[in-house]
Length: 225
Image 1: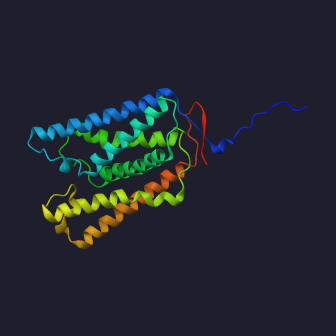
Image 2: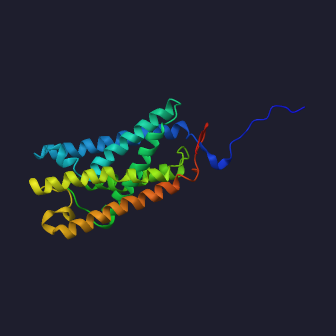
Image 3: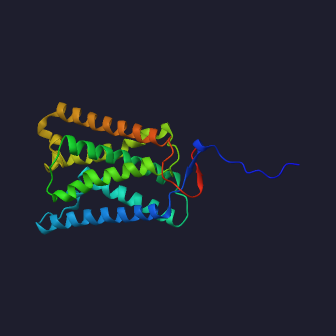
């Protein structure tokens, strides 16, 4: 007579929940980034630059705020023992790809620009992107992202570009020099194509990484299919 046997999902098809300590770390990191963004904005207000559309017109600042919110939300769900919904995991993958682009473009093309204190720039352009990427790579609580959803990487940067370029031709403000209208349409088009291609390439890396289990996870398994 057979005794009851537990059916165990194959290793490759299960993602494990991270330890509560890491979920709490996600919350604290997200709150810290929000605090840094608020601090840097307060410095601008102190010198008379109160327009929030200028401050959050920077791709780094807006993306950092969104990514911090995603980390905080994911962390709170984990601490409470609830599973992150698929849309939140997808959003986490999207912001991970965007922060890869933030880190690469800032450190390769526009290092040292901006009016924020140097330590703020280092945190937002180096430390935070690295932490978010490591979180995605090492913590195995994310299911595989479907390739059919890769196109969802594009609406956010496209909308950001439209708003920024409209501001450039109306009030002359752009966050980055390579988007200045006076550089000419060919230069603008080239930079836009390169930026969107970089976003897609970063997305391919993030989507590919979702196919591999993290090396640090503990707790109940979740379906990775």
